[in-house]
Image 1 (cartoon, helix red, strand yellow):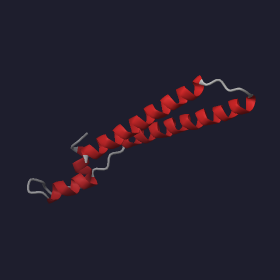
Image 2 (spheres, one colour; image 1 turned 180 degrees about the horizontal axis):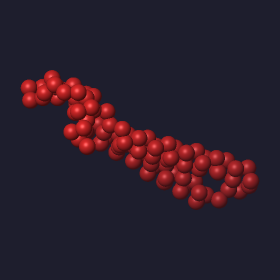
Image 3 (cartoon, rainbow, N blue to C red; image 1 turned 90 degrees about the horizontal axis):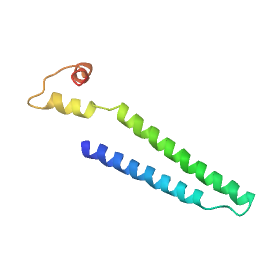
Image 4 (cartoon, one colour; image 1 turned 135 degrees about the vertical axis):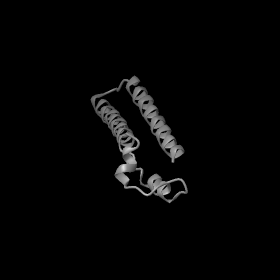
Length: 93
C-alpha cells in the first residue's frame, strides 16, 4: 500500500510542476491584441485551478487514511488479536 501512496503522491507533484511550468511559459508570451490576452488569461486561470484542485486532493489524501485493509489483515494474521477498529486506530495516535 505504501508504494501506491508514494506513487500517487509523486505523480501528483509531477503534475503540479508541469502545470506551473506551462503557466510560466504562457505568461512569458505577450499577446498581440485584447482578444489574445483574454484567451491567455483563461488558459492560465484554468492551469491555476488545476494546481489548486490537485493540491487539495493531496491534502485530503494525507489527512484521511483508510486503515480498514490493514485492520482486516491484522486481525486475521497469526500475531493479531481480535479488537475493535477504533481501538486499532487508537494504537497509531
